[in-house]
Structures are given as C-alpha cells and as structure tokens.
Image 1 (cartoon, rainbow, N blue to C red):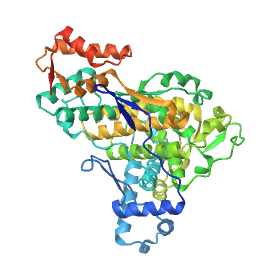
Image 2 (tube, rainbow, N blue to C red; image 1 turned 45 degrees about the vertical axis):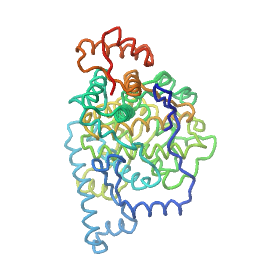
Image 3 (cartoon, rainbow, N blue to C red; image 1 turned 120 degrees about the vertical axis):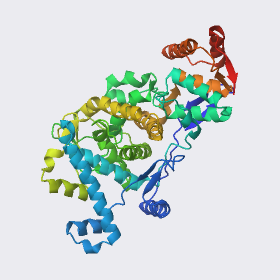
Image 4 (cartoon, helix red, strand yellow; image 1 turned 60 degrees about the vertical axis):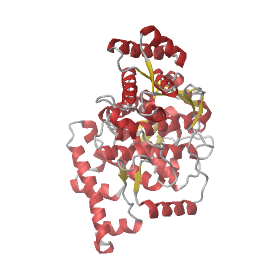
Length: 480
C-alpha cells in the first residue's frame, strides 16, 4: 500500500497493491515452503502482535499418512505424530458436534460444508504462508490503554475526539499519537472507504451492484459483496473437482482456455469459492478460528489477484447468470471420519447457508450471502472492538476487500480514502493539536456533529476549516 503525503495535511492513500508474487516453478515453491517451515513451523504470527495473536495451523497429513490412517495402521506413526493427528480429529469432532447442537437449521443442515471451509482455510495457510504477506506492520500498542471502554477500533466522531484528548492528557508525543491514530483508522472498517472508479466488467452480470461501490463506501458495507465476488472473479474449473455447472446441463463456456494453475493457486481458489459458506452462516465466537479464516481469506485474495492478472473470468466466461456452484464437499480424511462415526449421510450435511441446497446460482450466492457476510464482519468487530483481535481482523479485511475489487476490475480502478472523522484525526495530529480537555461536553458534541455533517456532504476538512469551526464554537486546540 503506497501513500503520498500532503505537507501539513492528510496522508492521502492511493491503491498500489503491496503484494507481487513472482512466477515460480513447483520446485521453487516447495523450496520456499521447506525453508519457511524449518524456521517457523506451522504457525503464523501477526506482525506487531506476535505476543498476542499466534495462529497455529495443522501440519498437513501426507498421502502416506492418509493411507496408513485409513488402514488403522497406527504403528506407522511416531507417538508424537499419532497424538497430533488424534488432536486434529478431536478438534474437528468437537466443532461438528457443536454445529449439530446448534438451534439454527442452516448451520445443522450445512455442517459438512461449513467444516470444509475451515479445512480449506487450514490447507490455505499451510500452503500460502510462505509466499504471501500480512498487511499489519506494527500495531499501535500505545493507543490500546487510551481507548475508553466501549470505543474500540470502530471510532465514531465523538470517540475519535475523546481519544485525541486522552492522548494529550497522557502527554503522548505528537508523532506517536499521529502514528497510533493513523494505524487505528487504517484498520477500522468504518474509517476507510473503498471506491471502484469503473465497474465495466462487473456490470455485465450484476448491474444492481454498480451503485454500491461507484461512490465510496465504508469497508464494513462492501465486505460482503467483495467476499461473494471472489468466487466468480477467480474461479477456475480445473482448480477444484467440478464446482461449477450450467443449469441447462451444458458445460460452462469460456472464450479462452482455463489458465494452468500452480498448486498454491488451486488451494487459494478452493478456499475462496467456499469462504462465504462459513462467513455467511452467522457470527462464530472462537477468535482463533475466525482469525484463521481471516488470514486464509487475505492470503488467498492476494494469490487470486496475482494468478488472474492475465485471465479475468468476467471477460472470458459466458452465461454467468446460468452458472451454478456446488457447496463445499468434505474432503479431509479426518472430517470424513468424524462424519462417518456419527452415522449421518454426507449428502445431508452439504449445502449453502442461504438455501441448504447442494448447488446454487452464482448470482444468488452473491445476492443472498452478501448481507450475512457483512453481518459476520460487523458482529465480530463489535464483539472485539476493545481488543487486538478486532484490530487485526479489521486491518486484514480492509485490504482483502480492495484486493478482490482490484482482481475484478483492475488495480488502477480501485482507490480508497478516509471518512471525515478519520481525516480530522489525521489533520489535528499532523499539526500536533488536540481539543482542550476542559471544553464543555456540549461543545465537543457540536464538534462531533459537525464532523458527521462534513461526512454527509462529502467534505474533506482541512486545518483551516477545522480551526475556523473551533474558533467560532469556542473550542480550544492545544499543542501536544
């Protein structure tokens, strides 16, 4: 992500994707993977949060291990590996039984597909961890203790002003306050606004969606659309076993041959096509599991962006409105074993959460799961608005959404900006100023209301506009 700075003003963002994976051979990929595993093992730590958020993902079972496990030939495993695989199975069993006990039918009926989304995430992380990168460089640790209870990472105008005052009271240096506020706004799903300048490709199949992101929208409002767009803009029939078909029974028509994908790209595509199954099923409260899904989503969208540079499904796939996509089908041997032991027919556990059917039209998936996926994001952010899970979740989702729009329409068509609330915070800290804590509450509320008006009028306030308002209202601005 690149930024140009206006002197004395606001850091103005421009969309320059941070991830450029070079083309590589399978041999080079395997060498990179071996080097990463030797150094890190099967773990991802969020940069800047390494002592807080550490995600462990399963060491994949080898083909030899799968065959031995199915034969119940356990003597082929070392005692440590045997216990490791038993733990992996028990975790899946606990998740499966919890879903079967859910009072929500769309979770019970589609438990197999939802579990497969988690398996796909594990597979995605174990494949892409060494060729992708996470967006979070350094978290604003200094700001965490300053956030008043209930404010968290999704700050409204009044909350932002209150936090600035607390920075001043605590005598946090201006540069540190500026950096912390900017990073908070960068991670917030209500402070960043995404806009696609032209949706010429998407318009062909979803004209009703054009107005959604033609004008800048906060990320929390377009996350669901971006997530559900991914399975279309990046799908490749060769990447997974028969996930697409025409409702007419005919094969899917394409203008040019499907791209020849590397193993890592196939794994990313498989995760992307099934991700809405998990996130469209409602809030999941296990933060480690949600972060596993979020990291896999972010890394897979990076890979999707790279692997489709020379092949865009929206340009080359015909009859999009007739294409059906199969719900994720369990493939992991341990997941299949858990389901078999419970004696439930596999076909009764496969389906999309919006209709519990094995297949659904791509356009229906986009329309029906967009709002549930948005709800998933907003509910998780609300639950974790005061902790570092919420910070990491928001930061990754913000950039992941931009990646999908860039994949759909082209990198040069995507840009993002900040809301008036975020801009005021940036301007004041750039000028090393904060509102006088002694200001009467009604005057501070008037300031917050004015910021909301600027946002509604699409005004990006500069220092002169802010200072004029504060002078007219009797609000003092103090130096850090």
